[in-house]
Image 1 (tube, rainbow, N blue to C red):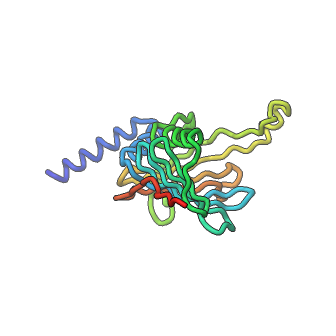
Image 2 (cartoon, rainbow, N blue to C red):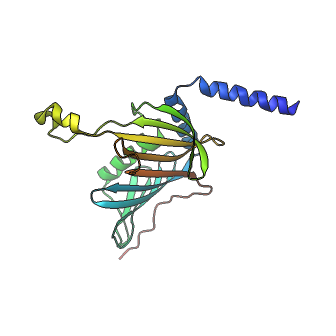
Image 3 (cartoon, rainbow, N blue to C red):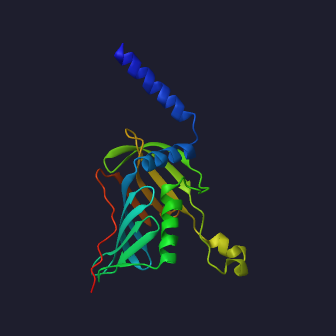
Length: 214
């Protein structure tokens, strides 16, 4: 009886998931991540200037501790946001940043992390795929192509030459949480421009730093 009940629950959950669009399924996964309240995003970004590694700890709705390490740099640069205040450490100790800049960063955290995404990116369901030894539900979307500031002057030739990026989102089939977010150009699917790993961290803390007086 319990087995039949569990099977019925699983089938009803699967049917409910199937009724949702691929974009809704991705949105639900990130909504579940936001509901966890505290999580970490570890990112590797590759561009023409080299490789950048970033670790961002979030405690929603308004706390962040970010550490950024550039390729070849001596150590990480850090930033802490608590409410509408922010502090940075460029290697010489913590200092409070100007209020207008702090509010801009706080607004960015609110709009891009704490709130539902406003992106128009659509997704298609790629189904279950094995990735790095584990099976995930995978979704793919084509991101808007960034154009240079003078694109209007140079006409449609610029738009035709621009190569769009595609995003692959890997969702844990057990927890329903997003685990990886990988971006690459459509012409080079194995070359990762952005590789982000999400993890829910118990006991995560983000506090205003102690600033030593001279």
